[in-house]
Image 1: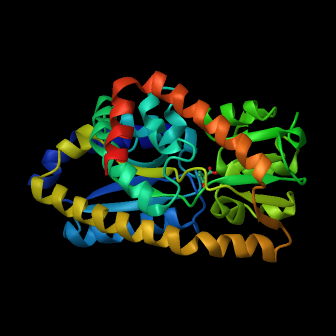
Image 2: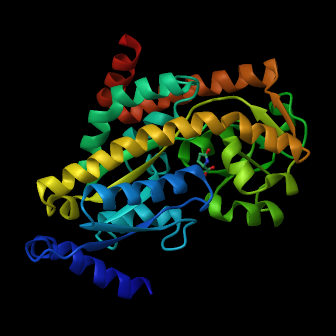
Length: 326
Ligand code: PCA
């Protein structure tokens, strides 16, 4: 299935110009990693509808949520290599390949939607330049709610976390786990319920959103609100696919993307407390992290930011400087 698809899409990207000349619409498959009912995926559908409208039907996007077309870890490469023209990815998962992409994963730097938007403004040009090097054009990004910890036991400090198997979603969260004496294993959200059910992991860091989507109350008992950062998903297009489009079509897609970005961020903020309520309704203890645990997290966070600055270099420092100056 994937091989056939690859051929079809490479051909589609290649024939973009001809497709416009004779007026045919292009069909674009858009893999997304998260549950169909998640607000990110629902906004993927909203985006696709807007793109059809604003391009006069020239680009017809079909959304494939839940990692059904490509697993989350494969989506970026599928877009880069033209196996699909467009897709969505949780970008800091690729910070090991390009450290700059971890800009939205710095603990306790931007912990509100407003600050996260400011940080994105400070990072946008540099991040887009990095994506261009990876053969990608970002159309829009959308933040997850703040990140906190899920456990199957009460946690007051790192003395309660030693040896726990921890589901990480990128290298930064793996580092966080190790600093807390846990054993990280990287798992996509789509595989999270199974990992918890089989004991591959029994703790993780995420928003209330992913805990709700994956019904983690079936396996875990405690959520500690930390609001450590608000990471972002990106909807991106293959550079050749993008450059092959008429300027008018590009403008229609970008208008759809800009509107979707605003609506998606607003929805994320609107839902943040709803998710906590649902976790609690389903029997989980949902509390702020206690002072000892928080102090440890903050100390680890400061160390992680310093390490990120070492790998992201002057570009990373410039993002933080620009953010702090605003
Ligand atoms: N949910 C995603 C990424 C961040 C979030 O809140 C996940 O856990 O995979």
